[in-house]
Image 1 (tube, rainbow, N blue to C red):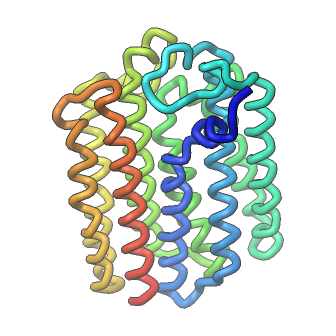
Image 2 (tube, helix red, strand yellow):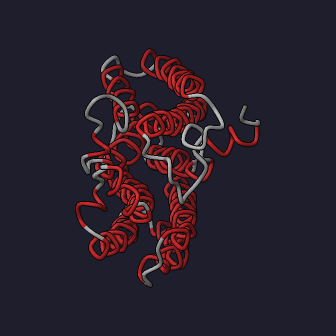
Amino acid sequence: MATAAQWIEGARPRTLPNAIAPVLAGTGAAASIDGAVWWKAVLCLLLSLALIIGVNFANDYSDGIRGTDDERVGPLRLVGSKLATPAAVRNAAIGCLTVGAAIGLVLVFTSAWWLLLVGAACLAGAWFYTGGRNPYGYSGFGEIAVFVFFGLVAVLGTEFVQAGRVEWAGLACAIAVGSFSSAVLVTNNLRDIPTDTESGKTTLAVRLGDTRSRTLHLVLIAVPFVATLALVARTPFALAGLIALPLAFKANEPVRTGKNGPGLIPALAGTGLALLVWSIATGLALGLG
């Protein structure tokens, strides 16, 4: 039986910046057009947290029953390490996704009916990333999905449910957050190239190979700072986003210096930290501007 601490570790708390950041950025974008609504922002945050934890447990379950996690370098996996039964982890995933769906329905009923379709796509994306007969995460589409769901959908959805519309500053934030989030996954998959190749999991990193995956990480963490310069057109306070630049540079250090395996774990945490700091600084800047 897994302990409470192991369940928490299995939920992969280091990925939580990927859930918090889009809500901060989207709320800042809504505030910049005088549309921020605090209780909807809170619901968006709870929804995002429920979905990412649900995704993490769903990945744990699906990868575990396939044997993909039999040899792990990174964070604890409950099924792969046999600390919890597949059924228990599957039920945890379903429970988290159900909570997210319930919160999403509140936002649908107070915003727009068509968000129900967006929510259904998010749930399907969460489950079929590594679940089902043909998981798209095993075909190299994981980074695209992360960019779409934790970047475009999460940021623009947060802005829309509060302000009733989206505009270019929100889109710039969405691209930035999506790029950071995709960079986190690129790092994870770069670390796992040897084991994923052996298990038949064809991630984007497996397709690109080691060198090009490292280049992709650099490009992805540079994009948010291009967005920062663009956001100056909305408010000069947006330059506050550059405070995350040293963190992004440090996060890329293990990647550009050729680290492998456990040596890439600091890049995961560092990229997530840069994402969170950028989103806090930019969200506040847009709200104040």
